[in-house]
Length: 249
Ligand SMILES: O=C(CO)[C@@H](O)[C@H](O)COP(=O)(O)O
Image (tube, rainbow, N blue to C red; front, side, top):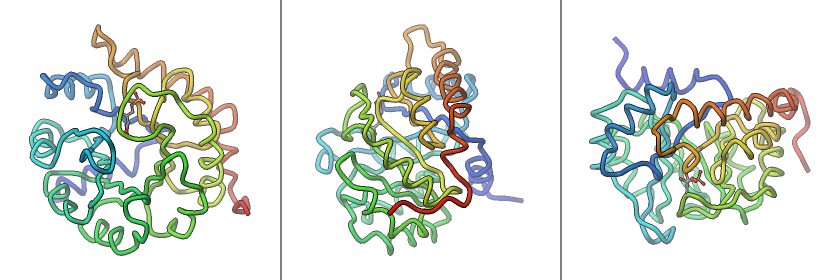
């Protein structure tokens, strides 16, 4: 009998690209359980959790006890983006709370090898995140240690910011270097930007504010993003993966 995490990871690993993961940061926090059920009804495959400590980023969100409460209301895989200065200190608490994929910032942990190994050792998927000013070359030495790379297309801390087009070069570089690696992008993703992100090679789109329409029709809002992503795939997303392509200089 597979454990619940094993089952969630099977869904996480098997989700077809581009995988659209709504962030809960912009949902109605007075009724998160209902929001999660509405997202499930809209057909989402996983949820992106934005954890902020008011130190690594200038905003506060939520911690392990809140994640544990959400774990009790859904079987969807949790992709936990730790925007915190000391992820090593809180790793076990987030795993125990029910996170399945744990993303740490290279800017917070410049030597991430041991922590990435710890994440995998706890039976989770491990990912590295880079902010807009951090070059692709900084993450390149760690690509064999991660299950995903998340490229921030805004400075982390808040939803609703403007998409930074320039980060797409990093998405292309990572995709060329490791065609099989999940490459996520986060910040300003909506029906206008999703196509360009996927065309560059993004295989996971984190969607925050563009998810939450006042009418609660998340199938419609996420459907528009999915349609734009599909067009991006036709426009070269698969080619950007470039099987056998050489890594960039
Ligand atoms: O990590 C973050 C913000 O730091 C994000 O996941 C935001 O929640 C994305 O929101 P939008 O830019 O899509 O509104």
